[in-house]
Amino acid sequence: MIRYLAVGLLAATALIPGRGGAQNCNAPELICKAASNQDRSLYFRDHCRYEQKIHIERYKLKGDKEATEELRDTTVTVEPAKKPDKTGETPVVVRVVADTDKKGNPKQSVKEGDQTLLSFGAVWDLAFFPLLPERVKNYNFQEVVADRRNERWFRFVPRADVTSIALASGIAQLDAQTGEVLTIKIEGLHNLETVDKEASKMKSFNATIDYNQFEGTLRMPTLASGAGASGIRRFEGNFRFKFEEGKYVPLFKLE
Image 1 (cartoon, rainbow, N blue to C red):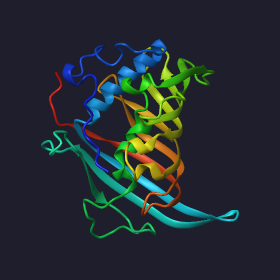
Image 2: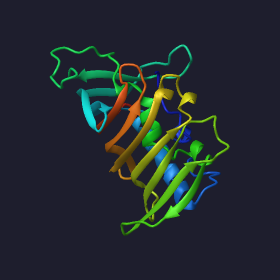
Image 3: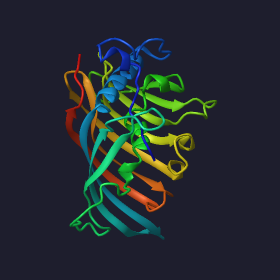
């Protein structure tokens, strides 16, 4: 799967606060603020070099018992390619820098291009940035009771008539004033066949994603954990995961 650089509604405004993402937003005001923040954050992130780590436990169910098939720890670096490809878009390059075998033993040498679950970046981005401005209009929102002070929580689910765009469903926990995304709990991913044939084999996916502030207002998906069931080649079966992201190095000048 090839993931391309996020164009983002703010690409032309060079991350100028308060411009772009919330314009013409047909959603609750705080969701519009969250959409603008996710747009700015993804645009900035996609113009950085950064690191991702994932621990995967893959297993099959045999009756009431689990049979472990793989324990794997992988570290990758992610950055935009130096120039566009033949489509005119700029690919996002994922390079494996550390990996283990299926028993969790470190490999002495790794191939940068080896396929891992982190190779399916478009799927992860759908989970990490579900409230981008171009997606918001395709959701129904319902505010639910927040368990934390100074937060407002919204359940989001795809509209029944939307089948042509990949979407997520879950609960967004937002700062009650700024709309910054604090935590998102993903309960499902939908219409993955519109992203990639292989991605559509992700049978189920849930995750709790925590976001940390970066550069004052941006919110990056720094920690996540969850589970799912996959029919993707080489990654079949049930799985649990723990994810980390960080070490952002901007590759462009903020204006």
